[in-house]
Length: 239
Image (cartoon, rainbow, N blue to C red; front, side, top):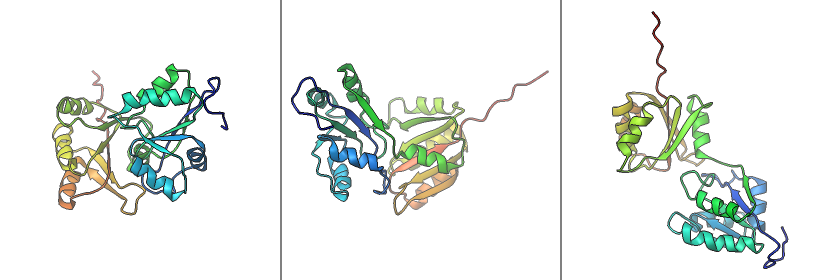
């Protein structure tokens, strides 16, 4: 780094930085160094990111970058990068681009010949997969299911998926989602992980049916990751 800002010949770098999904200690030394060294941090939620920065006494300025302003903000951020400013992009939690804005800015940066560097780090998807006890060598991630349009069709498509399935869901809709999945997929093996890496972390193993009952009884709270076994393989019938 250490570039002279405003010199057209010097192009900044866009850093994609993963942040903790709960426990603030789950961040790499390299990530903290870059968050301190860059000129600006584009954050999905400046309040959430501000907690992390305050904890590690990082004074770098923050600018909001989310699904509502990504088109307008991207042009401004690319303009800064092109005159030598280094920029970090972070999400609410975890790896940027997983159910939050990323593609638009990265594509714009690459189109402008701006270097893009991604730092590895926390991901609720991988944490849930590795504790699930389900096959992790092949999986499909669908994020949040559509609330209305296309929801039923997607669930029906996922019912045919043979790879392990990973979904995100809110505590307000988890009971409805589990019941709908159960009705279409049957009583598949499934794992519900909530509040991962936090004080109240909980991993509940069972089936779609049993998890639906437990979720309704417990009135679950917190961020939820759902891992579902893939469709059973069909055997070829010989003569």
